[in-house]
Length: 312
Image (cartoon, rainbow, N blue to C red; front, top):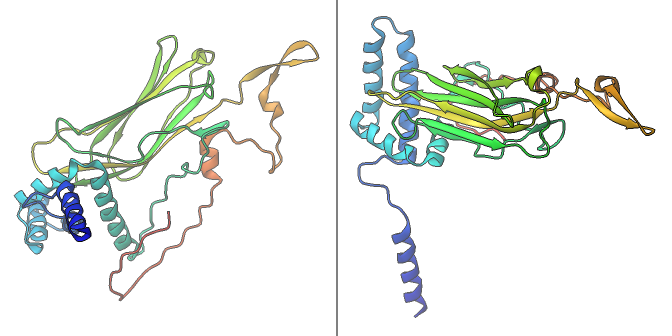
């Protein structure tokens, strides 16, 4: 009886587990193909002759190496992009392998987000409380990511903000194009904002300083959007990683304090101690610049490729 119950339980679990449709490549297969695909695109950039023709020849060779047609690869890509979390993991592994290959030739690894260590409270804080990674695909449904974070009691009039994240483009033709919009909404319905074109794999930092005329107006929300244009041919993926939203008070503004029953105005900068042990660092750029910049490059020669992962 116990064996029968066990078999029924296993059958039920297998029935509830979503199965990959026939013809759809596995995660590992997709990862391997995407690595070779990106290497083929990189090789096409340095080859003589027509760039488009070089791209076509080398990418078709990459697909042929794995015994996959272009239609099967595109269909599988669409399938896996429906699950953002799984696609992020695939792209992360692809970028990790490509980075390792570059490092083995002496190319320096990009630094991690330099603001991810910030606490959620304090004069300079990371107030991001949403998902850490997003995959954008150039179709009508999945090509836009937007967020809105409402203010709370830790937000003060005159606060400055910086939105930081890492971009990773993976496309069929090495094209890299996306757009980001970052804005702050105030309680008097005023809005300040800025936009940025994203065109490479890098650490993005979009900063918004509070104008003087809004320094006394409470903040309602902080908002952002990333958009990747729709494309008709080939594939294009934009992976956004390590989101950070830095909120930092403007400590240079004058504050009102009560002293011995009288109200006086003091410049907060005079209250900042200059010793190394008690210094107040309110600007995220100052914090970044004080981080250690020592890096080591491990050049591997005449050894088989072996994939390793960094400690996070």
